[in-house]
Amino acid sequence: MVIVLSICLFLLLLAVAYLYRKNKTLYHELKILKQVVDLKDTTISNLQASRVAVKDVLENFSSHEEVMRRIDAGESREKVSNTLGIPVNKIELIVKFDKIKKEKQDQLL
Figure 1 (cartoon, one colour):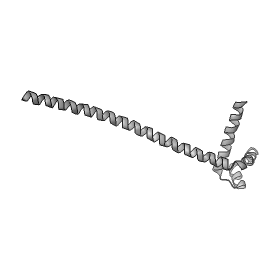
Figure 2 (spheres, rainbow, N blue to C red):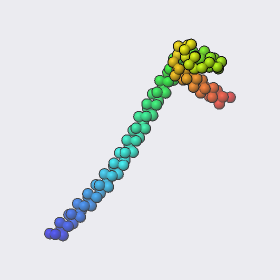
Figure 3 (tube, helix red, strand yellow):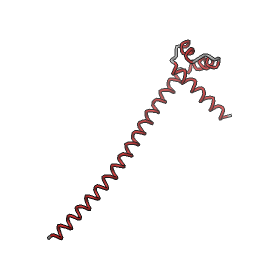
């Protein structure tokens, strides 16, 4: 009888050890999955912000040439902003967009 109880206790301890190990593995995998989800959410947020930025540039594309002419003439972004009534952050987006556009054109040549 004692031998049977000892065997049952040993098997129970093996089962507990196995479940403990499996639980640690699952906890580690859950931690990695949470990091992946956070990264995915950050990426989606950044893509949405980029889409909004591009939309803003496209909406102000009609003033693109005027902005770039004034910037190239040496006017500050703040002065261009006040003169044309466009926020400074949109002026900066237009300048960045123009820089990217020029780089693409240089690559094609």
